[in-house]
Image (cartoon, rainbow, N blue to C red):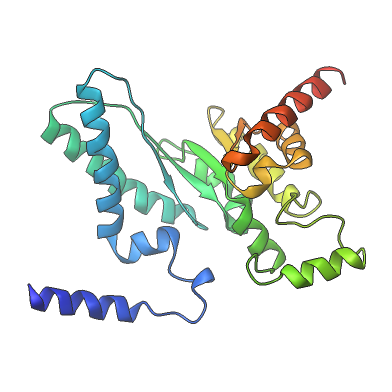
Length: 238
Protein backbone atom coordinates (compact mmCIF):
# COMPACT_ATOMS: atom_id res chain seq x y z
CA UNK A 1 0.00 0.00 0.00
CA UNK A 2 2.84 2.39 0.90
CA UNK A 3 4.49 1.66 -2.45
CA UNK A 4 1.24 2.53 -4.25
CA UNK A 5 1.06 5.84 -2.39
CA UNK A 6 4.61 6.74 -3.39
CA UNK A 7 3.87 5.85 -7.02
CA UNK A 8 0.76 8.04 -6.93
CA UNK A 9 2.79 10.89 -5.43
CA UNK A 10 5.29 10.61 -8.28
CA UNK A 11 2.45 10.81 -10.81
CA UNK A 12 1.11 13.92 -9.10
CA UNK A 13 4.57 15.54 -9.09
CA UNK A 14 4.97 14.82 -12.79
CA UNK A 15 1.86 16.92 -13.47
CA UNK A 16 3.34 20.14 -12.07
CA UNK A 17 2.86 22.99 -14.56
CA UNK A 18 3.93 26.60 -14.94
CA UNK A 19 0.62 27.65 -16.54
CA UNK A 20 -2.11 25.19 -15.48
CA UNK A 21 -4.86 27.35 -17.00
CA UNK A 22 -3.76 26.09 -20.43
CA UNK A 23 -2.41 22.77 -19.29
CA UNK A 24 -3.55 19.46 -17.85
CA UNK A 25 -7.25 20.19 -17.41
CA UNK A 26 -10.56 18.89 -18.67
CA UNK A 27 -10.42 16.00 -21.12
CA UNK A 28 -6.62 16.22 -21.14
CA UNK A 29 -6.54 14.87 -17.61
CA UNK A 30 -8.90 12.04 -18.56
CA UNK A 31 -6.77 11.20 -21.59
CA UNK A 32 -3.56 11.21 -19.55
CA UNK A 33 -5.10 9.37 -16.60
CA UNK A 34 -8.03 7.36 -17.88
CA UNK A 35 -8.86 6.28 -14.34
CA UNK A 36 -10.23 9.76 -13.70
CA UNK A 37 -12.82 9.45 -16.48
CA UNK A 38 -13.63 5.89 -15.42
CA UNK A 39 -14.06 6.89 -11.77
CA UNK A 40 -16.28 9.89 -12.47
CA UNK A 41 -18.42 8.08 -15.05
CA UNK A 42 -18.89 5.05 -12.83
CA UNK A 43 -20.00 7.22 -9.91
CA UNK A 44 -22.61 8.93 -12.07
CA UNK A 45 -23.89 5.74 -13.65
CA UNK A 46 -24.12 3.81 -10.38
CA UNK A 47 -26.09 6.69 -8.90
CA UNK A 48 -28.36 6.57 -11.96
CA UNK A 49 -28.87 2.83 -11.45
CA UNK A 50 -29.87 3.36 -7.83
CA UNK A 51 -32.41 6.03 -8.78
CA UNK A 52 -33.79 3.92 -11.63
CA UNK A 53 -34.28 0.97 -9.29
CA UNK A 54 -36.35 3.24 -7.08
CA UNK A 55 -38.75 3.66 -9.96
CA UNK A 56 -37.69 7.09 -11.19
CA UNK A 57 -36.66 7.84 -14.74
CA UNK A 58 -33.20 9.30 -15.05
CA UNK A 59 -30.96 10.37 -17.92
CA UNK A 60 -27.42 11.37 -16.96
CA UNK A 61 -25.69 13.85 -19.26
CA UNK A 62 -21.93 13.37 -19.34
CA UNK A 63 -20.10 16.47 -20.53
CA UNK A 64 -16.52 16.11 -21.78
CA UNK A 65 -14.74 19.41 -21.06
CA UNK A 66 -12.09 21.41 -22.88
CA UNK A 67 -11.87 19.47 -26.14
CA UNK A 68 -10.24 21.01 -29.18
CA UNK A 69 -10.16 17.95 -31.43
CA UNK A 70 -12.98 15.56 -32.28
CA UNK A 71 -10.69 12.61 -31.51
CA UNK A 72 -10.34 13.86 -27.94
CA UNK A 73 -14.10 13.63 -27.58
CA UNK A 74 -14.23 10.20 -29.21
CA UNK A 75 -11.49 8.92 -26.91
CA UNK A 76 -13.38 9.97 -23.81
CA UNK A 77 -16.77 8.88 -25.13
CA UNK A 78 -15.49 5.36 -25.72
CA UNK A 79 -14.47 5.16 -22.08
CA UNK A 80 -17.82 6.54 -20.90
CA UNK A 81 -19.78 4.11 -23.08
CA UNK A 82 -17.71 1.18 -21.85
CA UNK A 83 -18.28 2.12 -18.21
CA UNK A 84 -22.02 2.63 -18.80
CA UNK A 85 -22.33 -0.83 -20.35
CA UNK A 86 -20.40 -2.42 -17.49
CA UNK A 87 -22.49 -0.73 -14.79
CA UNK A 88 -25.80 -1.64 -16.46
CA UNK A 89 -24.70 -5.27 -16.74
CA UNK A 90 -23.56 -5.43 -13.12
CA UNK A 91 -26.67 -3.66 -11.81
CA UNK A 92 -28.99 -5.61 -14.14
CA UNK A 93 -30.79 -2.47 -15.22
CA UNK A 94 -30.80 -0.16 -18.22
CA UNK A 95 -31.02 3.63 -18.42
CA UNK A 96 -30.54 6.23 -21.12
CA UNK A 97 -27.70 8.73 -21.06
CA UNK A 98 -26.18 11.42 -23.26
CA UNK A 99 -22.56 12.30 -23.93
CA UNK A 100 -21.76 15.82 -25.05
CA UNK A 101 -19.04 18.38 -24.69
CA UNK A 102 -18.29 21.84 -23.42
CA UNK A 103 -17.16 24.26 -26.13
CA UNK A 104 -14.36 26.25 -24.47
CA UNK A 105 -11.49 26.00 -26.96
CA UNK A 106 -11.86 28.15 -30.11
CA UNK A 107 -10.84 25.22 -32.30
CA UNK A 108 -13.80 23.22 -31.03
CA UNK A 109 -16.16 26.00 -32.09
CA UNK A 110 -14.55 26.07 -35.53
CA UNK A 111 -14.86 22.30 -36.01
CA UNK A 112 -18.33 21.86 -34.49
CA UNK A 113 -19.65 19.90 -37.46
CA UNK A 114 -16.93 17.31 -37.10
CA UNK A 115 -17.49 17.00 -33.36
CA UNK A 116 -21.28 16.67 -33.59
CA UNK A 117 -21.42 14.61 -36.76
CA UNK A 118 -21.71 10.88 -37.18
CA UNK A 119 -23.25 8.12 -35.11
CA UNK A 120 -20.89 8.74 -32.19
CA UNK A 121 -20.88 12.53 -32.37
CA UNK A 122 -21.57 14.78 -29.41
CA UNK A 123 -25.22 14.76 -28.41
CA UNK A 124 -25.13 18.21 -26.86
CA UNK A 125 -22.92 21.29 -26.65
CA UNK A 126 -22.57 23.70 -23.78
CA UNK A 127 -20.57 26.89 -24.31
CA UNK A 128 -18.11 27.44 -21.49
CA UNK A 129 -17.97 31.15 -22.20
CA UNK A 130 -15.55 32.01 -19.40
CA UNK A 131 -12.74 29.95 -20.91
CA UNK A 132 -13.87 30.58 -24.48
CA UNK A 133 -13.38 34.31 -23.92
CA UNK A 134 -10.04 33.79 -22.19
CA UNK A 135 -8.64 31.73 -25.04
CA UNK A 136 -10.15 33.78 -27.87
CA UNK A 137 -9.13 37.16 -26.41
CA UNK A 138 -5.91 36.18 -24.68
CA UNK A 139 -7.14 37.73 -21.41
CA UNK A 140 -6.98 35.96 -18.07
CA UNK A 141 -10.31 36.24 -16.33
CA UNK A 142 -8.60 36.09 -12.93
CA UNK A 143 -5.72 38.49 -13.57
CA UNK A 144 -6.89 41.27 -15.88
CA UNK A 145 -9.46 43.11 -13.76
CA UNK A 146 -7.40 46.31 -13.69
CA UNK A 147 -6.57 46.02 -17.39
CA UNK A 148 -10.24 45.52 -18.35
CA UNK A 149 -11.19 48.53 -16.24
CA UNK A 150 -8.62 50.64 -18.11
CA UNK A 151 -9.88 49.39 -21.48
CA UNK A 152 -13.42 50.34 -20.52
CA UNK A 153 -12.25 53.76 -19.30
CA UNK A 154 -10.50 54.43 -22.62
CA UNK A 155 -13.50 53.08 -24.57
CA UNK A 156 -11.32 50.45 -26.22
CA UNK A 157 -14.05 47.88 -25.55
CA UNK A 158 -17.77 48.41 -25.05
CA UNK A 159 -18.30 45.87 -22.25
CA UNK A 160 -16.36 43.64 -19.90
CA UNK A 161 -16.09 40.39 -21.94
CA UNK A 162 -16.26 38.36 -18.73
CA UNK A 163 -19.68 39.82 -18.01
CA UNK A 164 -21.14 40.31 -21.49
CA UNK A 165 -20.47 38.12 -24.53
CA UNK A 166 -18.11 39.74 -27.03
CA UNK A 167 -20.57 39.40 -29.90
CA UNK A 168 -18.37 40.55 -32.84
CA UNK A 169 -15.56 38.14 -31.92
CA UNK A 170 -16.44 35.33 -29.55
CA UNK A 171 -20.10 35.65 -30.53
CA UNK A 172 -19.16 34.98 -34.13
CA UNK A 173 -17.40 31.79 -33.06
CA UNK A 174 -20.53 30.76 -31.16
CA UNK A 175 -22.80 31.44 -34.13
CA UNK A 176 -20.58 29.38 -36.44
CA UNK A 177 -20.55 26.58 -33.90
CA UNK A 178 -24.34 26.54 -33.54
CA UNK A 179 -24.94 26.58 -37.30
CA UNK A 180 -22.41 23.85 -38.13
CA UNK A 181 -23.25 21.74 -35.09
CA UNK A 182 -26.99 21.68 -35.79
CA UNK A 183 -26.38 21.08 -39.47
CA UNK A 184 -24.38 17.98 -38.56
CA UNK A 185 -26.90 16.90 -35.92
CA UNK A 186 -30.37 18.50 -36.08
CA UNK A 187 -31.17 17.08 -32.63
CA UNK A 188 -28.14 18.70 -31.03
CA UNK A 189 -29.05 20.62 -27.88
CA UNK A 190 -26.90 23.68 -27.22
CA UNK A 191 -26.68 25.87 -24.15
CA UNK A 192 -24.32 28.11 -22.23
CA UNK A 193 -22.78 27.64 -18.80
CA UNK A 194 -20.72 30.75 -18.11
CA UNK A 195 -21.28 33.92 -16.12
CA UNK A 196 -22.48 35.61 -19.31
CA UNK A 197 -25.45 33.21 -19.23
CA UNK A 198 -27.13 35.45 -16.67
CA UNK A 199 -26.54 38.82 -18.37
CA UNK A 200 -29.31 40.59 -20.27
CA UNK A 201 -27.61 41.36 -23.60
CA UNK A 202 -25.90 37.98 -23.64
CA UNK A 203 -29.17 36.12 -23.12
CA UNK A 204 -30.77 38.02 -25.98
CA UNK A 205 -27.81 37.13 -28.20
CA UNK A 206 -27.95 33.45 -27.21
CA UNK A 207 -31.64 33.34 -28.09
CA UNK A 208 -31.03 34.95 -31.48
CA UNK A 209 -28.32 32.48 -32.52
CA UNK A 210 -30.45 29.49 -31.57
CA UNK A 211 -29.34 28.29 -28.14
CA UNK A 212 -31.79 26.03 -26.33
CA UNK A 213 -31.05 27.13 -22.78
CA UNK A 214 -28.87 29.30 -20.57
CA UNK A 215 -27.52 28.52 -17.12
CA UNK A 216 -26.02 30.86 -14.56
CA UNK A 217 -25.31 31.46 -10.89
CA UNK A 218 -28.38 31.07 -8.63
CA UNK A 219 -28.61 34.77 -7.79
CA UNK A 220 -28.86 35.59 -11.50
CA UNK A 221 -31.76 33.21 -12.22
CA UNK A 222 -34.61 35.78 -11.82
CA UNK A 223 -32.87 38.22 -14.17
CA UNK A 224 -32.08 35.43 -16.63
CA UNK A 225 -35.70 34.26 -16.75
CA UNK A 226 -36.92 37.81 -17.33
CA UNK A 227 -34.33 38.41 -20.04
CA UNK A 228 -35.27 35.15 -21.77
CA UNK A 229 -38.93 36.20 -21.78
CA UNK A 230 -38.03 39.61 -23.24
CA UNK A 231 -35.91 37.97 -25.96
CA UNK A 232 -38.78 35.66 -26.91
CA UNK A 233 -41.33 38.48 -27.11
CA UNK A 234 -38.89 40.64 -29.08
CA UNK A 235 -38.33 37.87 -31.60
CA UNK A 236 -42.06 37.24 -32.02
CA UNK A 237 -42.69 40.94 -32.70
CA UNK A 238 -39.99 41.29 -35.34
